[in-house]
Image (cartoon, rainbow, N blue to C red; front, top):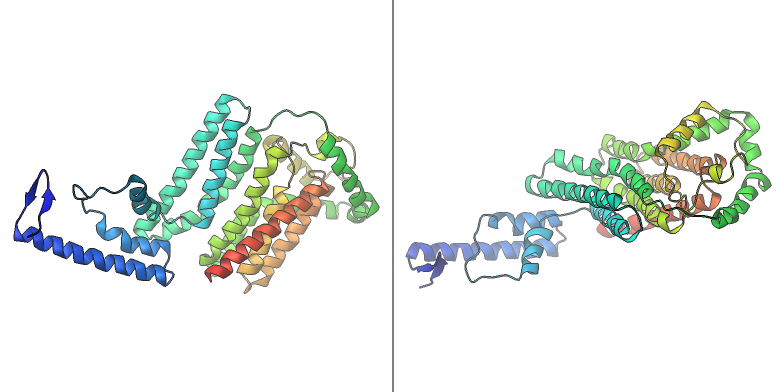
Length: 362
């Protein structure tokens, strides 16, 4: 007769043996079901429902000691089914935590960065954990929108890492290309040929960069394609986070501050005053290379062209908006031409990666 450990002794009762056999049989069925789920490509969340839930309240028998790493891998890692966008978010804020320790910045900023990042990561994990337990539509939607305001935090956080730098070697080299673009190609004259009309449209487009993510998510929701939101978020976040991550390695200032009074737009429109005030209050002085405005807007546009072919106007609108944003960054002297080109390259890379993942999962 089998004896199971109970407390400090053993229980030889037939009832206990029957329970042990029943539990063993049930465990075997669960394991085989989980194996079948993996074989047919079942999602991690559904595997968790098989592997984890029926055994939540079971006690580990004395003597059945699991290795600590294996225990956490089975009980926690596999049972918090993180999306790729959430993993990307966590990886980025872990990266900025390392930067906060490595860079010679004020200790108070280091502590604040680590504290804020811990809260951000904990929030993402908590939402994923709660959603894996309840499978709630509300929690699923909250996970879609959780990252949207954190993009602004990621941008502002890079401003905390700004270090004093002297010299304008980078800016001087970049200005050569700017003047070729603006004057030799005649872009500046063409934009100002219709008076303040095009300069105003460019400034409006520049300020609309913050609407790309919410507009795209709303479009997917309205078109009943919410299941594609994760693919959009991964591509969009990859585009902006890579740009932000490169800021500390290219310390630079925008041309409007390095070369005040040079190559500025002729027309000082109300929209330019609005953008100037916004940047004066919330801009950062870490770097302008590459342009996250350009990388984010183009990454969002390319992703929506792929993810919402049923409504072609959505992707086309975002692509036109991204082109106008890129033009506005150079014409308005917010960025250099190389910043915009680097942002475009990052966006293309983000879309290529998102397309590869999307097709592989399909």
